[in-house]
Amino acid sequence: MNDSELEQMQSFHWMMDMLQCVDVGIVVLDRTFKIKMWNGFMECHSGLLPSHVRDKTLFSVFPHISEPWFAQKAKPVFELQTRAFMTWEQRPHLFKFHNYRPITGNEPYMYQNITLAPLTSATGKTDHISLMVYDMTDIASGKKQLEAMQVSSEENQSQLDR
Amino acid sequence: MVSVLVCDDSLVARKQVAKCLPPDWDVAIHFAKNGEEAITALKQGKGQLLLLDLNMPVMDGYQTLQAILDNNLHTKVVVISGDIQPEAHDRVTRLGALEFIRKPVDPTTLEKVLLKHRLMSGPEEAEDAAELEPDIRDCYQEITNIAMGRAGDHLARTMGVFVHLPIPNVNLIEASEMHMMLSDIESQEQVTAICQGFIGSGIRGEVMCILSDSSFEDVAKILNVKEDVDDQLQLELLMDAASILIGTCLTGLAQQMDVTFAQGQPLVLGQHRAITDIIQTSKMKWKRTLAIELSYGLEGYNVRCDLIILFTEDSMQTMNAKLAHLLEDI
Image (tube, rainbow over all chains, first blue to last red; front, side):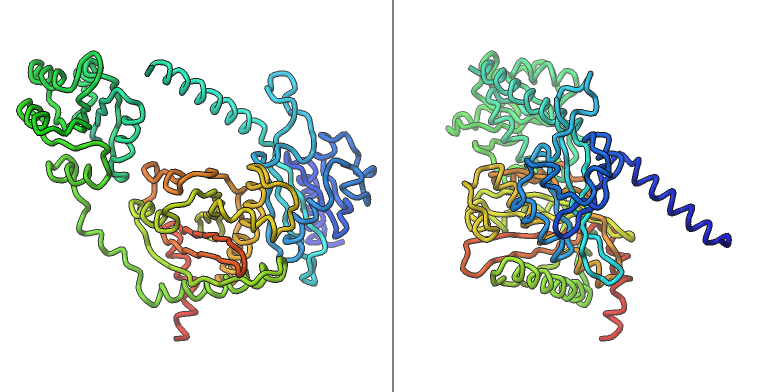
């Protein structure tokens, strides 16, 4: 193996390592929604090993995710190669993971933003999509607290005005 | 920065007055609930300009004007009051008020008064160079047309609907004109809006997707949703429709400019509100932007969806360079 090949191998390994340990959930799904990749974040938060979930459909591993609903979301990603987004405001969590900070956190579960992105093969076809899970718990709980404060201050104000 | 003190006993009135201040006017706003509070604030230097109501508890407007004279406080006073009897007008003028505006105040009247008394400087004449050159505008219009054509085709195929392709409206707009543009889009109806940032190869901006509230039922039909359309589901529908519209449009634009854009997570700007409430132009930090407006309609459905693509001013240089080849061929 020559030097450049070795270098390529090494950077590939780094890349894989980063995907594995990055603090974002990464799942690769095929057209039938079988799980093809499952990174460290998903493994740690779900408690399910990659070997346990590989080639099983998303819906058999997580029965509470509705298949028609998810298929509808994924359709434009496969067909149009656009990204699809789900925010915590519309759906607090797709995967019911526990809060990252179980002791000092206010929320029992992790609020999530989800992005579905197309993965294009060398032939230009999109047969796989990636699903990314971002932890939005701190932002969500901050926003909830702020809203609660605004409501109570408006109540105080209206009492004062009276 | 000019400090402005708004004195009124009603919270609604205080907010309303503050909202009417010109959006591009750099001011620090302070509030007082009655004359006494106003005098205290004025003594602390909070109020080169005082916008004063007349009927208030504790110390009313007349007493406040008198107190300003007695204490020799330096402030310019504009009275904003619902009491529009000639006598009231005369009395406040005698007590040193510059002008009398009747409630409810509107932004145009307030701006006129501010300009008349030189309380704020008018728009600088030198800035009228904000015109797009016709061939550049043409160029943007054309690439948007192509991008939209693709987006429309995608939409039509995935959803089985006929899409009326709008003619893109390309303009350079100032921050202060944003409100006008938005109120042109939707003056009556309540809307739900989301925005999404994009960036790549030195080009950055935001796309806003605005859907009128009456469209939701039909959108649900098109997307095959059988459940009742509640708030949560509406948000989801908008997010889905917006992902497709924004995604295909941005991809189309990016391909033609030979760049790729990273898209941020979309953000909900507001639900069921008047469009002008959704975007607070007074908080905006930019001065000028390239705006592309698209207004989609679907045949046979009551769906109105507006897409506004806003590019930062500094992106235009890069974009013009990327599009130079299109212009060369002419």
